[in-house]
Amino acid sequence: MSSANRKSAGLPDSTAPAVLPVTRLRPAYQQVADQLRELILDGSLAPGDRLPPESEIGGNFGVSRSTVREALRVLASQGLVKTSRGTTGGTFVSSVDPDQISDYLEASIGLMSGSAALPLAAILEARELLEVPATALAARRREQHHLDALHAAMEREKRSRGRSMKFREHQHFHDVIMQATGNGLLAMMTEPVFHVLRTRFLKPSPVTHEGFWAMVDQEHEEITERIAAGDGEGASEAMRAHLTNIRDAYREA
Image 1 (cartoon, rainbow, N blue to C red):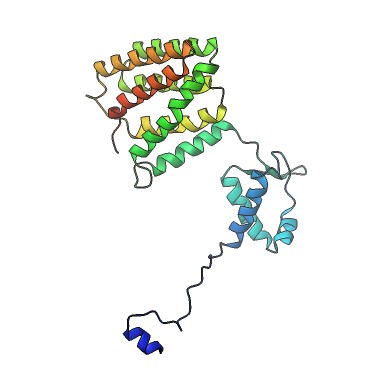
Image 2: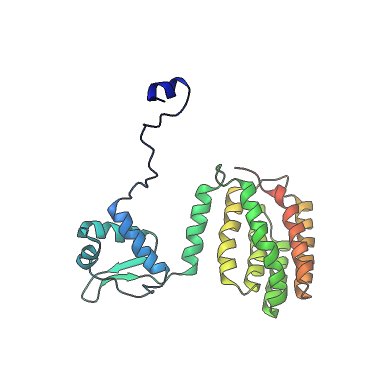
């Protein structure tokens, strides 16, 4: 069948060129940055390692020094490398501080939060998926100083006045539970979520009235008792109920 006849019959034109599944090339500096980042993340370049001179990197990639310089600026903005001047200077792979990671995550989540890509419901769900099983882990691994810190946080929360101060102590209580898991990555992941929820989505009164805080105090006591008893299942269920009950304290921005 001819091309004209195929068109009149509503059939695709077999002579038309197919759409090729090509990938658009990224700028040269971004490709250099991507490959250097992979070398850092897979351990080929370790914290403290000095990168080769810009001219040598450029020769390896077949790009100019200005392109390499731009790639290094990208990596520096992500906290992956740092440059120092002088006879002992150069560009070195950074030693990452966990606080920097939390700050970066908090800023990124905060910027995305409330959008279609990251609504409040998704943030609350992610928190529950992290914190409920983590509470069971805390019940198995907690030490006495964690229990002392939980009791101290509850006492400060009861004595504090004002919505902001109460939620700060409330957050600290949950932070201690993450620390009790003994898993630093869990604490690093959940802290930014807590901060975003408190600063961006926290509802004003009347939701956070005295009756609300009395409920929070009671639920924190139950969670602490379960953790102290080493009851992982009971602790996680108490945390699940608690997070469900405080959902109304947050609102879409």
